[in-house]
Image 1 (cartoon, rainbow, N blue to C red):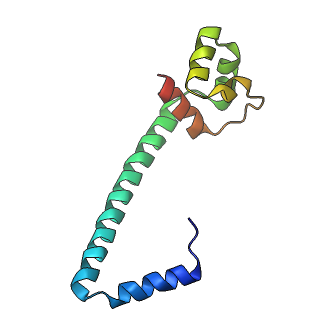
Image 2: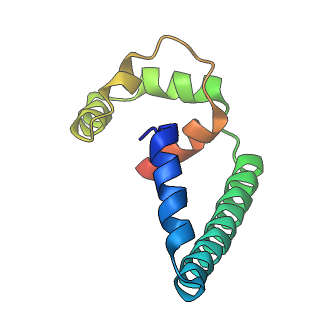
Amino acid sequence: MKLTNKVRGDIAKTFASFPNERKLVFKNLATTDRLRYLEAKKEFNAKVNKDYWDTHCSPFRFYKLLQNIGSEYNDSIRSIGLEGLIHLQEYKLNRHLCLWLIEMVD
């Protein structure tokens, strides 16, 4: 959702009209959510970075794997809505995408 300057201004005016106690509630929520977000991001990045270095599946190998899997796996891939993977023409794939796809299948 794109906020226009008018909407932003209205939000700022409304917030400015709140008593300090009510502003403090929102500020505390924002701080708590920000800290929770940063912690979740840190955990995710640590996992991705660890898995990134632990995997030996290069994008090219992933491409070759997709080209050589049997029809049983193709049906499974289609059933979860990822049929486009079967028809990949390019073998330069994002490593994090490869890792995520492999984790979802494993």
